[in-house]
Length: 433
Ligand code: S3P
Image 1 (cartoon, rainbow, N blue to C red):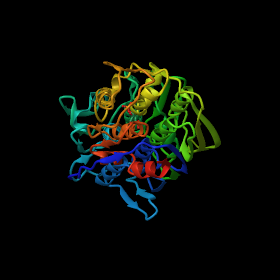
Image 2 (image 1 turned 30 degrees about the vertical axis):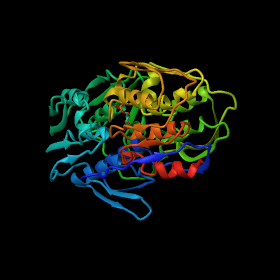
Image 3 (image 1 turned 60 degrees about the vertical axis):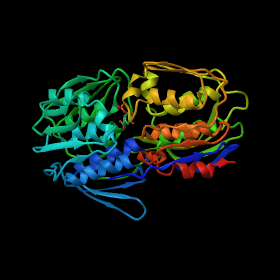
Image 4 (image 1 turned 45 degrees about the vertical axis):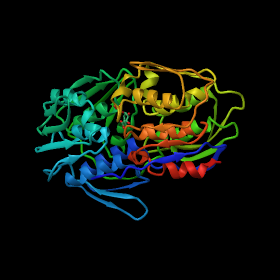
């Protein structure tokens, strides 16, 4: 499919206010779609992500024999294969989505077919050895092309393993959990840093049992799943763009309704509070293990402090680092990000692209192999932003543009639709000019 390249012009804003609901969480949508596809019976997934990535996962579920219907209100109805995926007619197209390729590999590896997973140019550059290794230890045969996609999986019965994840990755953890669910024996996974735990909650919601201690998760094989009706909480990583934008205006006032507040994703709120965001939780409830709430945010009246992000915190904020870096010049103390080498193997080399675009907007900074140091008290000017076809770079610099002098042009702006198709329209509605 050919995408038409579009640009977006972002004008500076005077303030930001409004009340809204961000679309369903991308990470949770992937997991619900995959487990609903494997389960017995029909699931109804409300507030499913509108992003292209989770729709790639739905497309793969159809190729594997699940039935997927989209209702007029956006609800996705998935009738699963009852534990046995069909032999795929054609390749499993994961599009731009690393989550689809990695997590799906674990979900299908025990099914008796040959699967070929492909992706776009960006996904075909991303490392896949990290899932090949544990899944091979479980008995799967997986062929990669120099460590990358296409991924060919020769499905076979799997056996349980004890695995310690060398790099913190929820996608790798999930691939092993999904494989472990269908393997012989009890699989255990130890994490040095606790990554997002949506898979653990989703598995329980679909009827599986698993145990978790401080740093270890165990799951017994041979468990079956049953379809459910479930609503996807709003995506805090999409909200992050507006939370950071709210920091840029002394009189900003935003209310986010139905927002996912899972503690393994909410480190963002702590960091932004440290910089100068005031967060009021108006309500909070638990649904299928996920915390969902309404929050109101404003900015402190005096200047914005800075932040020092390294170690475990980096893994917990991995998707939000580009936008935090993009607003760093507007803080007083600047922002230092280290231990973030994983950013170099995301949809783009996010350290290099953040650096390039900060430079284009006139900022000074220091770049490291594993991060950036961006001093505060800097003024930015409008520029042409190179997105590298990366959704989070396009949105991060749209936020930086709100306080820059002059207009900013976001090239290949359409890429935002990978996770957040409504982004520019919402920004226009909330920004006062
Ligand atoms: C995700 C995990 C993270 C994140 C990605 C979504 C997930 O990737 O960057 O956008 O849904 O599990 P890693 O597992 O590679 O850290």
